[in-house]
Image 1 (tube, rainbow, N blue to C red):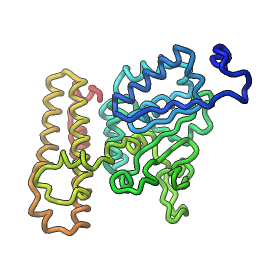
Image 2: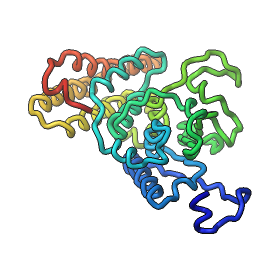
Image 3: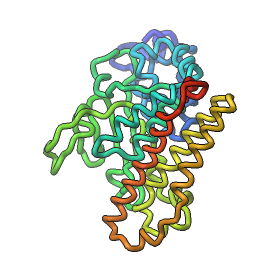
Image 4: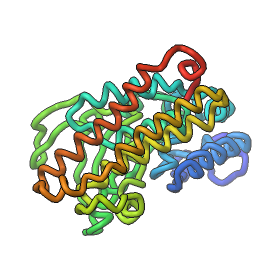
Length: 322
């Protein structure tokens, strides 16, 4: 109200406009761009006019990072310093992946969440979005959006956008929502059949990163020997490419020759696993058997990274960061 009164746009509380800021997708560019835009809004004394902030893909990563601080909207200097500050230790990121790999629905989404959280926003945030419902009301209300993969690829248009707020998660077009605290639980015909712990912000960032919904982009990274339907191979290949990018990013943050050599060895281990031609084996399997095999291979990729990390001696690489 202080800003609105100063520029005499309104004369009463009843006529205060409801202003929302909507962030675009676009990976790291949009994530950093949104932080910069909000930083300047604060400097111009305009940030406190926002009632809502919405985002999709990259902009949701920066939203998740911002809301880890209950006072973020009054101190954007701290938010900027976090993005440009110390990086997450590799061991911390791998420990999170190791724990999640034991769960029933561990997938590429978890690895994508780690890559964006640790590699771009530089924090592993274990909190849950529903906790935001009772926190600082001076911050704009956050609404996170994601693309529903099947609707994006095949239609119908209704149900294409999945929305998550501190209070509810679901589809506005279909008028279907559940409490956010139940995000990750199992439902059948609208009835809760198995309550599970709410997913944390790291996994949620993986869900909100919409790149994995683009099937055409997936085709570009599949090696020729994988002569199987796209749905059977895509998660396995995405798993490999995210791990490869994670290692590449780590290599760019360190200078020690020994550590870089060790990372090159790990990159080769993963490369050899993916490029070992198994076309004869795949042709002999049913679709369900192929799916099971790819799931096992995906876990083996993560296992290779975990084992490699445990076997490293203390030294330059063990104290380096992601």
